Length: 479
Image (cartoon, rainbow, N blue to C red; front, top):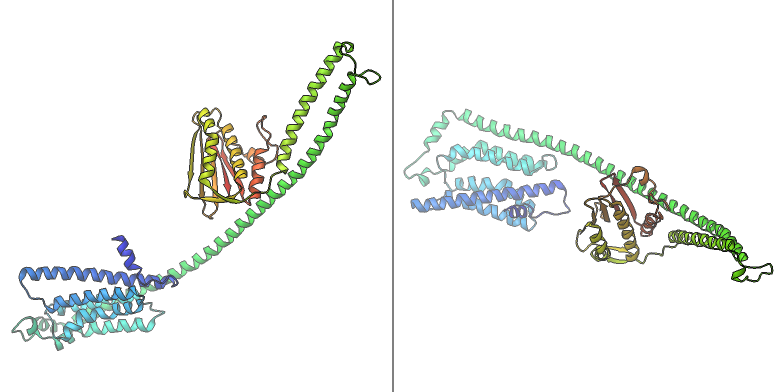
């Protein structure tokens, strides 16, 4: 029933029209539909009653049928876009079909003198609801004048044209008319007063409504402008933020080059130590001494020197590799990635680890066919880095939980959220978390998050983080 009401209400609506026109169309259709249902129920009830009492079908029953047909035709022509014709028909024709036509052919019942004027007064509300008094002045005042005159003269028209014998055989006059005539001026003044009071009240309320709507529209326009300004400011802030991140990464790339250069320079003492160790194995002429001529103390010195060289060389190699990873990221190979495939790869990769650590893992994609234009391997590396951090943060947590969720945000950007319920990150650490080589873990190089941020920048995307101590951390990848 709700769908029927909605479909009937929207008959003939033009999406290009303004809101006021659409509202008038909807109200016209709804009034026609209500009149259709009311007349249908009245018609069915009358037919059933006449069938039970064996009465013949009267003109009164026919005028219900005519009004029913009029309502149906109004909805039909609205269906084909003739909404103005449907509206005019609703304003003027119900009173003609229901009141004037039966009166013109002489069908007037005695009780009609009592309720006809009030039917006209009730009908006068229809143009009040469907016609704008300021934008359609002629139609507004013409329709109300027509109904006002009908209120004044309807009973005179019935007396003039009504034929009592049509309804009650042998009757030459209406007794109710003689009774009404004894106080007719007061009777008519009451009807006119009621008509004027109702329509003046509705007119006043509609003026208030129009004024409030104009004020609301102005305020909405002002709010829309503010929203546009705020969005522009937000975009500007994000642009500046991206610029700052880009400059920060550029600065750190330069710093990394300097560090790499310094590492090479610091390797010189290792080379010198290696040369000195080699000299311990040589005699004055530079020839290699036989093992038996090398003393125990020299042997210990050589072993100690070699161990130092080995240790420092491994440290330098690892550091150089970590440093190089920040400046040697390949250009992304963009292609369509179905996120369900990406998530499945990650799930398979960490399945054993989750089982081993007891992590409850959840994944969700809304909608199921959501996709990205990105480099699969690089984005996968970012997610792996974030998973590794999450697993470290959830160590010694009684009920570790990790989730990855993909959906579109209110700005229609795809975002991937990775959340854990680990120990969380302090505000002080959050401020520096994306800096290269920064880590609160002594066994961590501090490269992962900085590398992830740079990968996101190469995709013209960004990586954001929020965290609460002892509640968990959420990283959001926004594309």
